Image 1 (cartoon, rainbow, N blue to C red):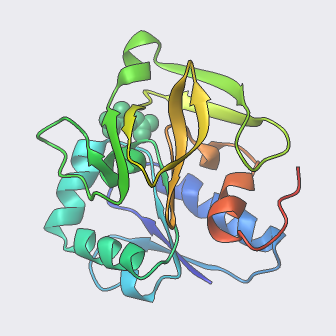
Image 2 (cartoon, protein in one colour; image 1 turned 180 degrees about the vertical axis):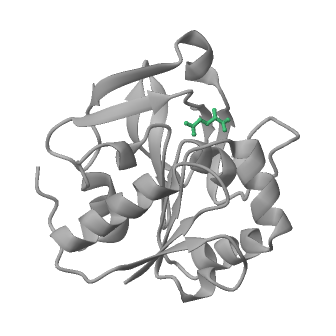
Length: 197
Ligand code: GLN
C-alpha cells in the first residue's frame, strides 16, 4: 500500500507514523510518502489530510496542482482520512473566503467552532462501527453544522457531528493520529477487516 500524507503544512509526521502503525497491525507493507508537489497522489492508494491551518493548506494544494489530483483520487473511489483542518479543506463550504474547499465531503463547517470556546479538549467518544469509545483529541476544532443526504454521521459532541463518512472519505474534527488507537484508520483503509474493539 502506498499512503500519501498531504504535507504542504500541518501535523504530517504524526499522520505518517499513525498510518504506518495501522498498516503494520494489518500485516500490510506500507510505503508512506509526503506529498508536497503534483504527480505523487496518482500513485497513492490512500491519502491522509492532516490538521494544521486550513487556509494555508488550501492555498498551497491549489497552487501546487495537488487539489485536482486529490479530487481525482476520490472520484476513482480511493480512500481518504481527513482530520481537523483536513476536514475543513475537504468540506463543501468552509464559510471563509481564504479556504477554497474541495467539496469531497458534503458538509459545511464552522472553522473554529469548538476552538473559540476552549482551545483544546479531549473526550471519550462513541463512534459508529467501533465497539468501545475512542479517545478523541480536539485542538481548535471545527464543528460540522450542516450535513448532506449522502453523509453518514459517525460521532457527535453536544449533538454536533464531529466524524462523518461520505463515500470513500472519512473526516473527523479531532485528531486520531495523535493517539495510539488506529481504529479510525482501520475504518477508512481496511473496512473489509473486522474492527477489533
Ligand atoms: N481551526 C483550524 C483551521 O481552521 C484547524 C485546527 C487543527 O487542524 N487542529 O485550520
